[in-house]
Length: 320
Image 1 (cartoon, rainbow, N blue to C red):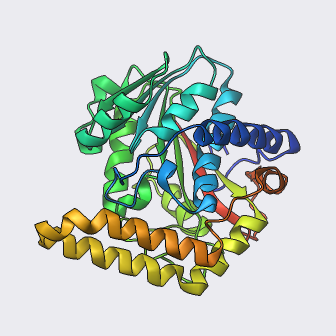
Image 2: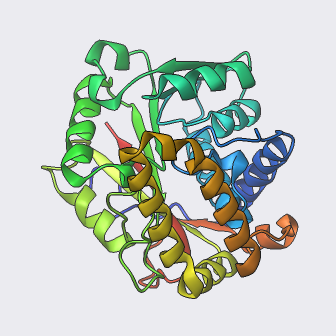
Image 3: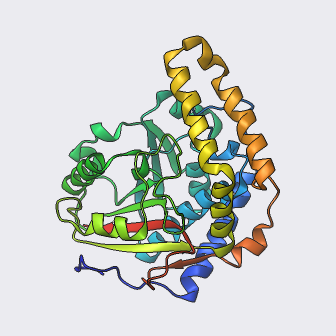
């Protein structure tokens, strides 16, 4: 709730979920029109446009769509800064469907990925730039109205996230926002998926607790939303139990081996691509999905009902 750090405000409602579903569908259509490169361009397993698991694609689309749905309630022109844009495919999709008077600067620490994004994606309201989250200056932040950290904090430990939030809090001007999305582990038996680039993964309760602490979150208030999709969550839990955790651990082992053997790194992406394709085909993730049917299930809610077993993503909005 605005001005209250002890619970999130209830922004749930049929209209909010309807807008989310419309934005997911529009973003999905943009992604479907992108031809993925033959080789992985991201050592963490490829950009979202290269993923074989349709559930993972939809998960990421829903995060960006939720950020857009929430930010449009501000009813003002926004200058957005995105941290950790990766290959830039979803940033491009967001720029295509957000209000044309908005602008987006999408950034990543990898110069290689930023050069790739510049070559592949172009929109009049979109700029790509190389930026490490540890090098953000207060003066650079003051030109933005909102910062997007979508699927980023799970790649940081608690100390790194805390320090980043304090840098953003010090640099952004009053009335600015920070939008965070991260996977929700509430429905899973393990606290971590085994996916090697992730340092920490959150449940609703643990993220709420983290953001409630003044030592972690310097912003005036925050709201915590859930993206609910029973079909997707049940399928994801089933896939993890059928070997998803083991597959993630094997992929992590391959990454660690290749980091010590330069010659092996030449084959790393090819091996990961093949393993990913085989695994997701065997578990059903590689099958073509009925996006219309899945969207009927999708909801965006800010209500803490106490039952988080059907939530696959958390979206936090921090207000200065």
